[in-house]
Length: 184
Figure 1 (tube, helix red, strand yellow):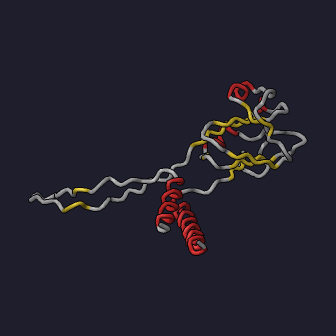
Figure 2: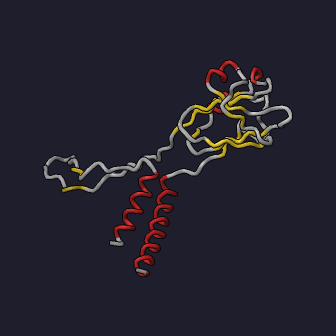
Figure 3: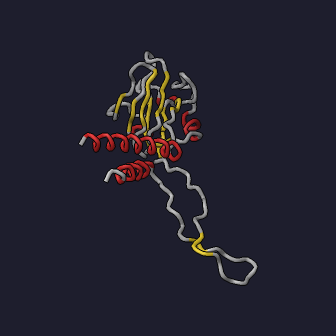
């Protein structure tokens, strides 16, 4: 029984290490986006629409709002409130201390504005968040058999079209299943 536990621990650790190695190749690290582009740029002097149009936001990324908390704050609002600069009935007040972060947890457009009257001066930002999919590596799968024709430009016959992994969770599941298959 102790031998089985030891083997289970070794294979679990191995599967976690394999998964982490594969994930580092297939996933991306979260990015911290400084809203407005700088350290303390949540203020009316920034064109936030222009700034956000040059960024790519993915699920898991973070927004950093740097500002003077005595003058400004940050409210998450819905689209209507964003468009009309409505400061009440907000979704969440993310203001804590003037150097605040917000995690982008789902693929949707997030809306933020200043709730102290500066929204009409441009202190609002829409953040379109996408799900991240790793790039597909274009590799040719193995040949099933060489072409058997006499033309000068033979076309290879492929075994399959391959199957790229689109989500990082697949890698964890596959490596864990492989590790546990050695147990029994």
